[in-house]
Image 1 (cartoon, one colour):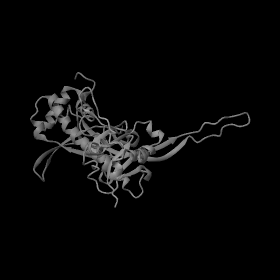
Image 2 (image 1 turned 180 degrees about the vertical axis):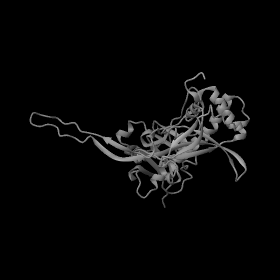
Image 3 (image 1 turned 120 degrees about the vertical axis):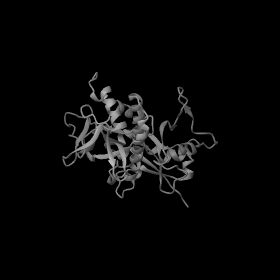
Image 4 (image 1 turned 60 degrees about the vertical axis):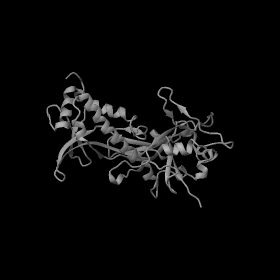
Length: 341
């Protein structure tokens, strides 16, 4: 087969293309996903996607949508297990012949995160895929469909997902709870006047960031509208711009930064524009992505082909098992709009 990875071989890739385009099932070549769920019952989740396509999907994460997903931590650990979140610390003491340092507690478990087995699906545009004949071109188009659907879905779930609906638990979902893991001191309110005053940004947000977080290179997330209309228009007392535009010298693309920190631009269905938000709605946040949130998945996408008797249609859908949770909420500062009067 010319490769140690069977799912990267041309034989497997061709068999997979034939399965998607014509429904041909070559059971001697194709590999099928099996997993044990929480009750130990094996479930067939369909044909495993070739590893070449998986690589395209992973590489496409940072290029298409998925700006939040590309930044958070990725794990691949068994579901249904409680993983402790601990903090370790100690203090330095001088010793003498008469006094020795006390034995110190090196820290303790402050909480835990438990990932579940949530199955997500992506419906495929079969008519599009049927028009592509060569294997490399087919894989490119197939990966593009998967990436766009998966990344858009993940960004929305990272913010507003509901665990009860078998989704990743969203940051704003957690913030809305009566007893939230996100500290109330980490929710910063801005009126329209404060939003336009760079001194208020200094006092209300930047002055509150602890040194331990500053060294981890935190960044912003907001819509392009908020960035253009509210951040880039900040001026000093002499009406001089506080913001300085910077561009990538290679491709000329604007580098979005505020206070020297990267600004991740997200779609308006993920966060509200500040000017459009009503009282109490969130318009952005300041965080350390890899410390704050994790997506747990083995990134093993599979495809199932079946006939829907309700609609009399052949359906192909890609499936992936994953879950997402806040890891450490102290690394998230939520920005909320406040309307007075």
